[in-house]
Amino acid sequence: MEKNDLLGDIVERRNQFIARDYLGFADAIGIDRKGKVTLIQTTSKSNLSSHRKKIRGNPKAKEALERGAKIVLLGFVKYKGRWKALEEWFTLPL
Image (tube, rainbow, N blue to C red; front, side, top):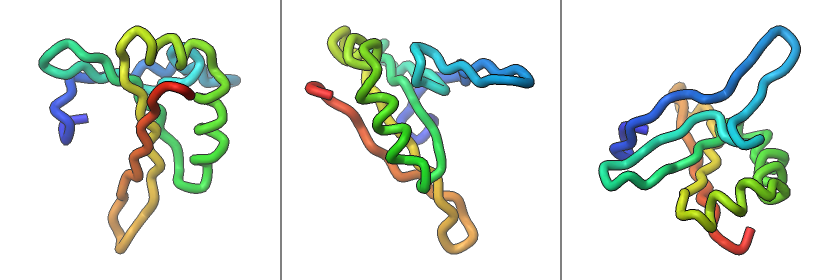
């Protein structure tokens, strides 16, 4: 989040049985200096496809974009011993 100058925090809730994402898809929320909201979904590179489908199939994701939020899917992969995030930004139409 700091890379994009976002003030953010994790919003996913977990208990011993389930994980519950904000609006059904977001693990974290970031806010830039102009007040623009970015909803962030994180996963491994190998699970990008299922999370992409999860976002595209979620009516709240579409509504968030219509209201001016940004949505990014981050897929993490280890490359040369370091973690790297692959970013996939969503726009309308989903």
